[in-house]
Length: 132
Image (cartoon, rainbow, N blue to C red):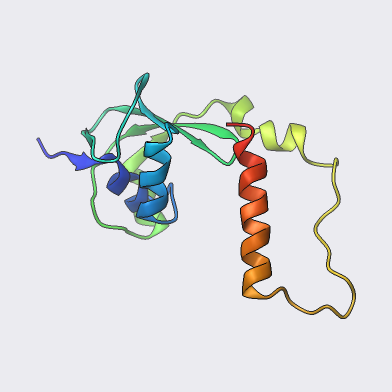
């Protein structure tokens, strides 16, 4: 039976944006197979249950099909079954909606520069990491 590295599979089915982000999530203990934390080099096979902490959410997946190349979202969807509980998916709506206004820039400030956007992304990531 074929096996694939967990970081490569998470990247190829588009759970993480890049393979390095998937590897980092494995290193920091945000990815589990069953109840065990895994290294990025851990091999997975079909039928295994994966728990992923991402952006303050605890996501759960069952591997249906193994792939090791990144494919489009429509081709990646049949490769896993999302078994995340409904209350976990609604956590964002319950907690965040209506509590804060949307992001705004000063009138005439224009679009954020690349550096400003990266600073905003880092700030948001550190904010969500406090819930993991």
